[in-house]
Image (cartoon, rainbow, N blue to C red; front, side, top):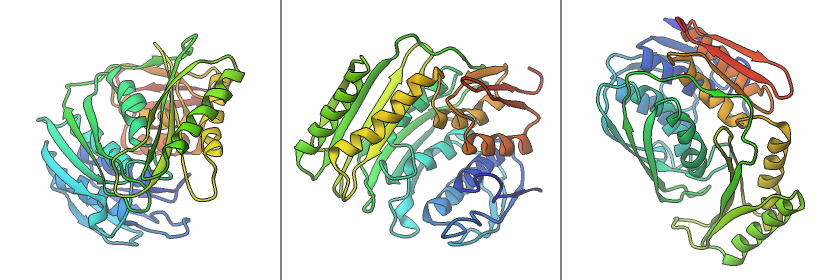
Length: 347
């Protein structure tokens, strides 16, 4: 059994998700210790426990330690099975835990299953500390399609913190292998698009978010197409601005969520300023996509190379986890911008 110290590096739930996802895909028995040991609330929280139980369901795994606040876990997958699954993050304990993070954990192994899968996931679709569903549909999945991962995702209902209750549906068609990815120099003029949305709040908030973002971008000579959604279907109130920069090479997404005490203009700045910093960096992909690509590219047939704005703690942590499971060579090279080179075994 492979044993990992889950407090390594960034030390959050990402180690758990990446490790168990790879364990299911590769049929490796794994033990995790010190899970989220340095967090204010150590151990498994509802969203993490849902990931454990969902991955256990698709792999017929034997699991110990799968309970709230547990800091130790053993996970022994048997056989990976595609098919239809429904998972509710709020079923463990009323929670707006992220469906995006749950989907990412399930996608890698199910993309290698013997049969197609359909998922219904219920919980938070646009919540703090997680990529919003729009990031998955506009950035994450398009990037993976470039290497041969075949998945579609549909947002059925928005889910904001703290009520949650959002719903997404996903269809995953397995493939026999993935190609490498070459994203070194960014697109010369990536298209900037986005959405400014509100649920159960005055439509003027979405309009102000959009207006401020367009003003910020115009000051840099940039044109954007930002759609308005003034009544997003949801159980509770919420507001979001999501921006994407996409091109033949470039793939990057940035978002911000409204909260009490934060003006619509401040929400817009929280999404727009990181987008401008990304464009200035001359990187091909954003920092979040960089670490999300690593497990897939380590399993590809060919060598991959991409640039990102920084070598983030999340990226370094994911690279460490992947190295524990696979003989792939993952090189993180400082530079302007930094480069990530991934050479799978035999490539």
